[in-house]
Image (cartoon, rainbow, N blue to C red; front, side, top):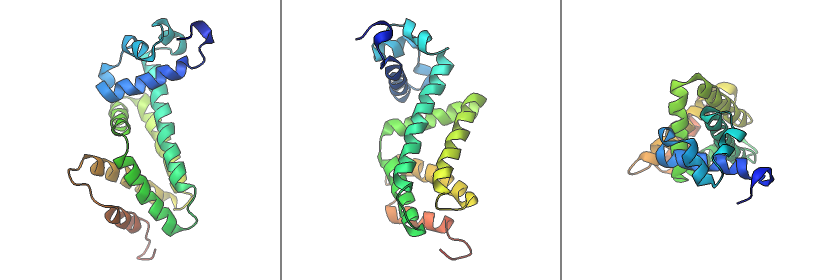
Length: 184
């Protein structure tokens, strides 16, 4: 382990350790001591890099939301037309729901904090706005808002279902939401 201020990766290790710990034990299981041990940093580094546990949690969750928004960008940047965008949204839902259990747990932990505390609600509002901005490249703002909610719901349902629905059902739901006046 590098010592002192010569360890440029220390802050990033603390954030990664925080997210890993939240995914394993939930927010109530997080402490400076546990994070420092997991990140292999001196305990004093915690207060050097972050103003307190809330500051660290907000920064960790901001880092996590950046990761999810990057997935939106990966899937929604390439489509050239509406049908391709619909397929990309369906693919995104399946990637999110079949992917890391860690991401699923982190999402739910952030939503729980946001339901209780306004500072975290602001973080989720910013996250939703960024996700919708990607969707608005292909769909009007009202449709993008509906799709954003659909993505969240279908992802959660697929991830937790004993027998998740298939891609055809996801694409059908996306198509219904993105069809105006009965026309695609």
